[in-house]
Structures are given as structure tokens and as C-alpha cells.
Length: 59
Image (cartoon, helix red, strand yellow):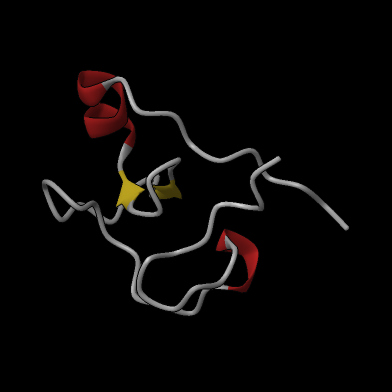
């Protein structure tokens, strides 16, 4: 089973990532979420590219 998805820049999960967050495609900073490929995307680009955000897990 694969481990958690981490940011490609800092190698941390979204809740621990301190990187500047902006959409990989359009550079928007609205609604940014870490996605399955380890990059951040806004809602519009996630929908257009059919990429899924990582589930937020509270521990």
C-alpha cells in the first residue's frame, strides 16, 4: 500500500507543508489543494484536468 501523498517540493503532507501554495497551471492561490501527483491545483484546474485532491486526514 502506498504511503501518504506529499508535496514534491518539501516532501511533507499537505497539513505540514509550509511551501508557498499556488496552482501548478494558472498560479491562482484560491482553493489550492495538494493532489495525487504531489502538486497543488485550484478547483477549476482540478476539474479541467480530472485530477483529485488528497483526502485530509486529522490525526
